[in-house]
Length: 143
Image (cartoon, rainbow, N blue to C red):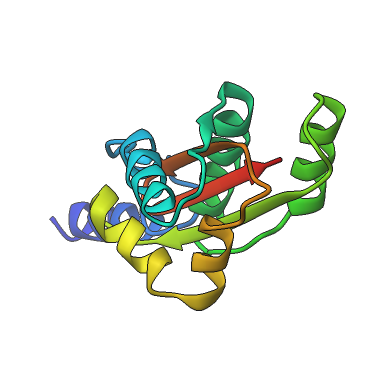
């Protein structure tokens, strides 16, 4: 019985490591982009057009953060370079978030933060992608 108890504790401890698969949650990124576009319209700005490539870059970064267990902007220059190579303007912007449980919470968090809000309202942005992986969210937009 002692051996079984020791094995159970070892399994529990090993399950706490950062190499575990990312928890599956609903990706409310598309809904968040709708809220961002309503907000932009209320400020007289054009809506951001959802773009598959930018959404893929946002999803890739959200997954990167989730696997590492920390919020960051690692690789932003590389994402921007990929977007530019695909024909987007060289001007891109990014917001990240962690532990938001809904599109409304995520949007409100960004709207209520001066720097994030500035990114949401940049008039020279035309295309965007928003993705949520686990607890991590990324908004990536380019002109």
